Length: 567
Image (cartoon, rainbow, N blue to C red; front, side):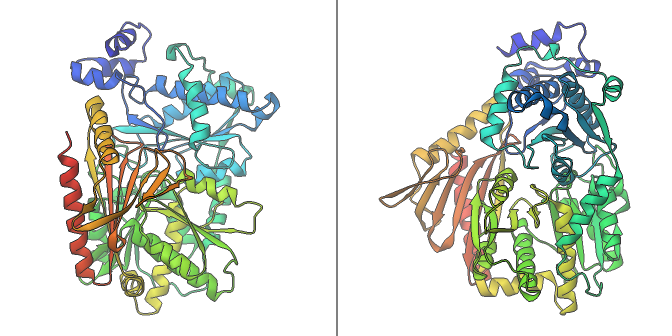
């Protein structure tokens, strides 16, 4: 089947030159991976390697996605409403500007206005811009923290939230109705301008966005004694991140080599603040200037990582730890200033540490857990509108946080400002964020987590991922590392099983399994929605830090052994 599709591309005489070049000198194994399937929408939208083929990011797959979005909008809204348009942003990756322009051209052919940013911008600003401009939808061309060979395409609804499965599935249906990706109509950008279908977005929107970001401050009057190193890891927060810190009074240093919008991310193996190696240059700079904390954002500026001065070096916080520290500082600050809402709601995901939830509940707040993917948190934030419940904080273990929901997605700019304020506040108290984390562990127990990624490429890798999850579903373990499995949650079957009791789960269906063990331990198996990998999450709790570390090791090792034994 894939050979037929490949040949239909190879035989075209009008094929895009970049795409044509990528077809040359490929082995059958490479060609099969390029054509055996079509890129699918996952937890982070469309994402894939830039190159030729239906399983790659190129002008044809991007046009096809936009054709589907345009048909969806035409089906959902009356013609007069299409003038509200679609906002388009993009990052610094290879082909990002080109894919953004291709997106606009397809919309223009449908008579749908495109608001295109005049230069690269953070993903959270796109979410803000959709609502600020009262647009129908938003598009951001980005592959987030993926390696340089990747790019991607995320779409947002009129509420500034990534489309959730119910609506994304409708869009996918329209995408799949496009039989010939080579026949999709486009409109020239100059013609779109003449017709009023192309509007450039400049710095005015930056001003409005940053004005909102500044409202996350709890104690803006505090003396600034924090020494900070900031790096955008070559990405989109280089301009707005530094501007935000400067305008809110923080003294900071940057990593000069990583202020460059390099699409190849030449100073790091992976532009992901989850990876310790991404902090190497920031650590060197921090030691040079004796910084208290180091903060890194990923290329599209929705994720944020923090490293804290600890002894002679720096300790990298996990996403769970940063989230708990931000939440702890936020709630204590709101209480102190008398602005704590009566019915606050905190959102996390099913793979997030329980530490933040325990902190929130200690303030009497409700905690709601969603599936992995910030679109589910954004959706829940919208559901609070018009109720007496107040959105307070949302986060997930993968270094994503939002404090105020004028953005309905992860927002590293909000997190940058609140993390800086929290670190500054604790420094004024003679403590670091690491010291405060130790205090939280003393109260709520030492919470430790680990994420193991199994990279499984191509069609065979995808099949093996399905076999592994199916094996745990059909033959669930009764214990792991001496800990009894108390309950399991199957999100594909929408059921929780605890002993003889079966409870329906209300979250959307997903091929995810969660197992709850004795002693507050747990683990989750989840196929990635954006990369060819199986994600294994493990969490443990113990009053004794050493015992917690040993339990984490034991559970992780046995889980990995069980997974690797499945062919």
